[in-house]
Image (tube, rainbow, N blue to C red; front, side, top):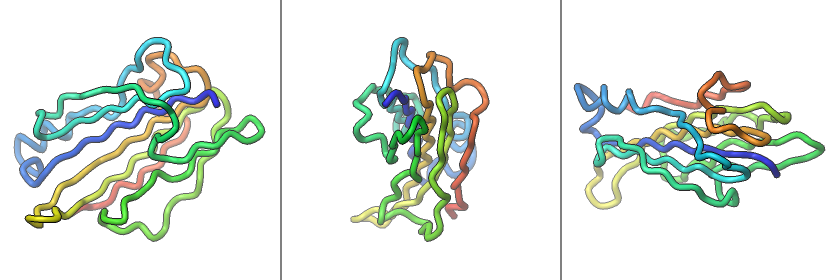
Amino acid sequence: MDAVVQRVRTSWTKKSRGGPEAALRNAAPTVFLLPPGLSSALHDVAMRESDSFEPHMQVRDLSAPGTILREVDGVLRVDPPEASLFAMPRRNRRPPAVRLTPGQWLQWQINHRFVGRYDGAWSYQLETFNIFFGSAAPDVFLGTPTRRIDERAALR
């Protein structure tokens, strides 16, 4: 399968829900340049409040991109991103799978709230999946996506 997934995870706590910290969080990008020559891989980008939302990047095998990708008859089927059983709000109704033809890309966003196991403190996460079907140029995600799914919800 010739596909590139860029997964951008932004994580924060109550500290970044308002004021200057929220402005810094909201300024965090949801797309990045890909490393040159990347094909059939996961470009994983993590940004955390504890690091002032500085991006930390890794290239990984495409075997666990956080969503299920299947190529059938020249079309890439992208199932909804995995949602943790411990995440809120619950999403009982999810969008259907998206089908991409070669040269198309999808941006799928979903956010979550988690409760700490020991202290009960809330933490938050926004995941953005940028998925391109085909051989990708480093700047492929800097344009407008062919398809966009927005599953972001009010997190309280």
